[in-house]
Length: 92
Image (cartoon, rainbow, N blue to C red; front, side, top):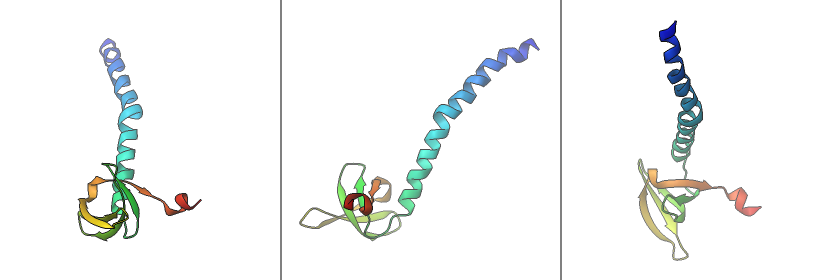
């Protein structure tokens, strides 16, 4: 019984860390991955570098975005998309 009580505290800490740190991080990572898989042409996106643009072409892991008033186009990796801006949010 005494050996079990010595293991109780470390197990309790592992459970607390799981619910406070690991689980929320995995959930957030899953949402980001789902967002990147659901990209479509015409979406307005922000890259992880802070560049705002509109998707003009999608390949497997390459996304072509159009930026600026000159409508410059360049290719970025799909993992470099940080967020998708909703058109409904900007119109309201």
